[in-house]
Length: 281
Length: 125
Ligand SMILES: C[S@@+](CC[C@H](N)C(=O)[O-])C[C@H]1O[C@@H](n2cnc3c(N)ncnc32)[C@H](O)[C@@H]1O
Image (tube, each protein chain N blue to C red):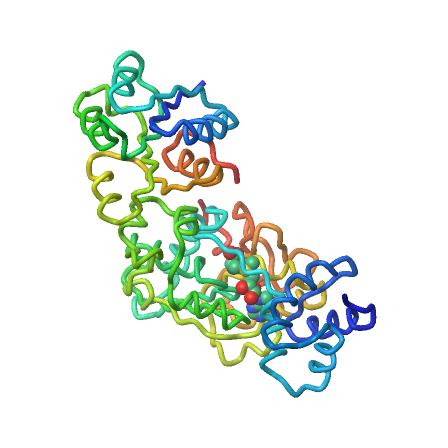
């Protein structure tokens, strides 16, 4: 079992490495997620694991601990509304303000196993008029290499493909290989996956027209959320959009953003021209 | 109240489906084979049909074909619910007029979503 001093250490370690806040009541979670890892690396107990992490000598183990503690659940077209809003008002507003030659850049900042970026890709493949012939670059990032590998492979089980997707989408955008359903190359080619920690500087990522950062800020404390949101505002085009998850908000946390009326979970720059906000349903 | 006809030769599957559908507010009828299912439809068209593929006498595909050949038979939303999980089967069912497809084994979440997708349940946002 985990000694209190070690628990505190793991909590500090995780906050520092990934932003994850481990409250005092998460002993069970920590144990159940890390026991398989102890077995995998033949580490006798949690005290020894803490020593290894402190020594900084086994980056692979440190990374495995961070990954094991992430929650990676995702769904195709999760919550539906953000994707409908994107199609109905965000993309039309962006296109209206951009030249035909502009490449639309979309960032899925916690892409997990890929359902979110693939949902966007599917939507754009289905309705090319949404981007008016503009090139689109979708960047999916996540801290966990394991989920990114799954995202790149684009393979899902039958339960995963039935949630959120219509049978027509399944037939059109997947091929069955063995027990898996694999995303077609056309969609895979629309997305670039990169390993990226949201605590690190965003400079190298460039500027985006739309950022989806959903169901990840919930794991962080307020200063971390505020910091990530403030830095994200610098990567977002002046008339770009940020979409957060259903249980997340920028209100009262980061004054660089204000909510877009009538579009739950969508934010624009506080100093954005009033005209974008007129992007309507 | 919306009605759903569950057509499956397995009484276990019918029972599970009935439980889920009743929780979702449907009035449920059952048939253990395609022929009685078609008779029941002729008497009163349900709003939805949850249809198994392989059944001893008249299989799901035959039911779908016959059903869709009549004007009245075009109204029910047909959701295939089967263990035939490959692309050819799914494509076949869709081309013959299935509205949705559930791969067995299924759970209540998937059934609810598919009923939502065919417009028989309100979306919970
Ligand atoms: C619940 S998933 C969200 C998936 C998707 N956005 C959705 O809403 O369905 C959260 C993801 O955030 C990732 N994550 C956690 N901390 C992170 C960090 N510091 N930097 C980047 N990604 C992180 C996890 O690895 C996990 O895959």
